[in-house]
Length: 553
Image (cartoon, rainbow, N blue to C red; front, side, top):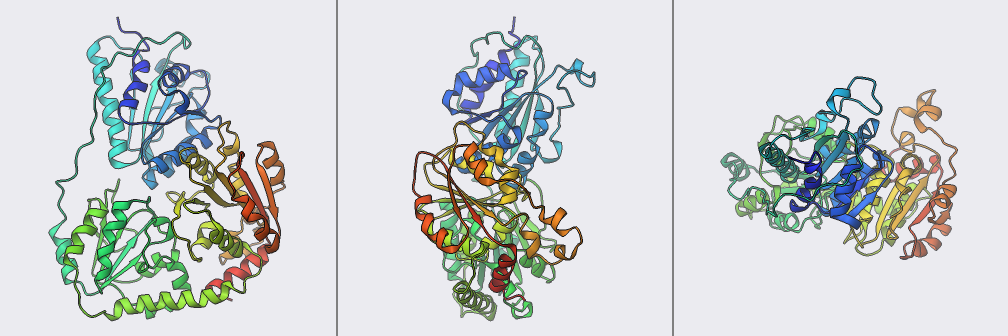
């Protein structure tokens, strides 16, 4: 007779064999058998995060840093729904998560039973695959078939880099001892993509093109990808745009396109006849707008995407091949002709913008842009920077980036709701200094990220307290609305110092450049506790400094 929790006892072993290293668990009763199974198998590699919304983002930060799936375990009911924001972010940012949700037996769904809702396929709009396990098993074959489905589901998460969902109905009693695991050790390999060939049409377009623009969006730091772009710069036809969150670095890259386009007349930039783009989100709204209003002869989207996209509205073609392989192949067809006007026009516009902004930086008043610039100059070597959304990520695209820094940001859906939690997840999976920069609303919104007994000492939190949503004072439109201060800026009464005290963080404060410069050295020193620096800035000064950087009145 098959034990009714045999599949629970074996599930943790299956995931271990597939290479899942970390588990994030939120407490509950319905998930008690799952907790028992995974804690027995993983021990100290389990993290307890009470708030499921925060837990989802913590797991996201872990998986993004490890580049391996991380498993989440929740109880039933609304706890499951609280994973939704992080799952959506993981789906659009291509981060592997295995979400395991305890559920009530099918007979109690829609029967007004406690903590019960329709959990099957609950994440269907932003999940790679969902699997709901049987409640009971009558035969060994049923058990084996379920394990095959679990392996297939987790493989999909690893292969396509995204979230998958395993729903586990559990009937009472919940606190009995689990049976011994029953599966034999096995090696589970992902299918090889080595045989995939680049489309001949793309190679032909590359050979024929005279003006080539390559745009690489958000990506993880990857040595193979970095090496693959180096030979492309030998081709005088090629211009490459890659913002800091692409984690690509080369002198030839235009890494601040938004800055360039604020300071350049659009008609001065020639239109490419071949556009190739890869990676995740691009922060620059002006770059998207520029290319959406141009007619480009040939456009290609490259990479293993979950779905087809046309970011620049060019009716593009698709090469569903790892981007570094495409770059390597195209570099074999580089030309060594005289530099064309196309490349000159883009590089000159960028150089002119850098020169003008360099002068503006020297005259900035104390403001969010100056604070971020100062932080960038003082970052510990080999730091990982987690950029908050809203104004922080946009301001960071206008400022010079330091070298040897890894850049992360929640730019899949670009919400403020999990920026701090994702940074905590990163810090839990590295010894490198992790520096998260975010606004006061983002910090307060996600302050449950600090409700964590394992909060690591390599975490450095910088909160730009500009008394609300600073972005809405920078973009045209909201400040003219009668509801601006109450419903856009959304000023709050929270004392950030008290939150730091509540969660036992080392606290620093600055409200002018002298205080900031004096304290930042101590702030970045590794201590026994995580650190938080609150920096008080003024929204009027912030807007003045922003306009100075982009040459806008």
